[in-house]
Length: 226
Image (cartoon, rainbow, N blue to C red; front, side, top):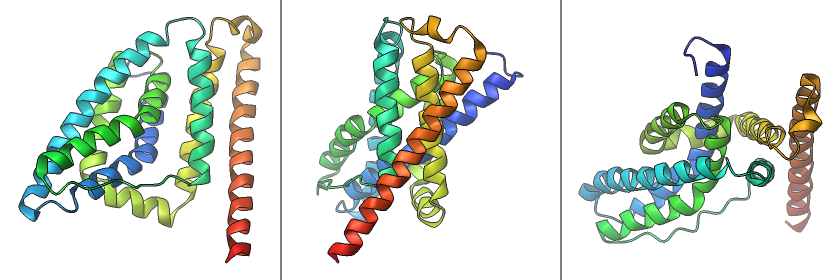
């Protein structure tokens, strides 16, 4: 992908935004897993836990990109990403992570938890990158400093400006829609360019609308219970 094209910068912006939104939970995992380790070991836990998590993520991303070339899997991946975008708006993720008292136990916790939670990030980045390994590498490189140094900033940003989550969810929904229209099984349905744009816009509006409505209903129910 040419560095000086609009496509390059659009994809790069999408990947960075996806990382910013989805890395917050991984940053929480790192913080919770390291909290009971001795102070002098906490930086080591964060560093090596992140290194291990990134290595696992690289392998997962490469596998996902290869799998997305199989007919039918872009459809599955796109639908999964739509669900992730919707769930992100509900703000119902729990962070029940057991912290290990020993350094290596904490590092192991980070790697395992990040592997389980990082699938959404891997799927989103792989979809946004359109199979371009250079863009995937950039996406992974961006996620490292976000997880290690940006955790507090991300959490404060999303708490202070909830619109960040909404924008991130919209980007995920848009990425999912682009994966769906690229699926060979349905590609002929979108032979005309304008149909692709309309479909992508409808998916984004539907997901954001449904997510925000569901979130408000949930908040009202919680308010009634209290």
